Amino acid sequence: DIQMTQSPSSLSASVGDRVTITCRASQTINNYLNWYQQHPGKAPKLLIFTASSLQSGVPSRFSGSGSGTDFTLTISSLQPEDFATYYCQQSYSTPRTFGQGTKLELK
Amino acid sequence: QVHLQESGPGLVKPSETLSLTCTVSGGSISSYYWSWIRQSPGKGLEWIGFFYHSGGTNYNPSLESRVTISIDTSKNHCSLNLNSVTAADTAVYYCASGGSGYHHPFTSWGQGILVTVSS
Image (spheres, rainbow over the protein chains, first blue to last red):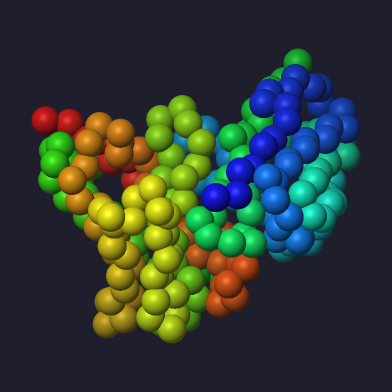
């Protein structure tokens, strides 16, 4: 199985801050890396697919980059609705695997 | 974008079979890949497996001996069966889809259904 490791596991930030979350795969996954946002009690929501493509309807303050094994999700200016948990997920091979999550909290 | 809705019992006894249905609207069940994903309370996300449009399945090796995913084209349903359940199978179960390509992301998710395994 491909292991996905996110850092940090939690992050405190303020509205307006720029934040970056990283995700590392245990082997190369080309650019088959997706990012999701999950609010408590809700299903995950796709933000970014194939490392850097913005899903339709997702605000442009979200961006993704990387290829191979190292990837980042950046939120350029945090909004109140962005405080949630973020997961990366590889779709290079099966079994599909997710990172352990990064909980973004209000400072 | 398709709409997905999970349904089924919220309580299953240990050693019995967990059976859930995902009703698909706004798209054909005969297209795309259909996945089941679960999330244990306070834990991360675990992919269970998928059924794909050519009629095949692919399961997580950690669950493969106990899981079956199938579709019913007449009802536009995708079903999950997980047998011999234990308390470790207590989780929110989601169905998800994301297109017809192998490397698809999960673009559409159901709201999720909490299944508790307890006697």
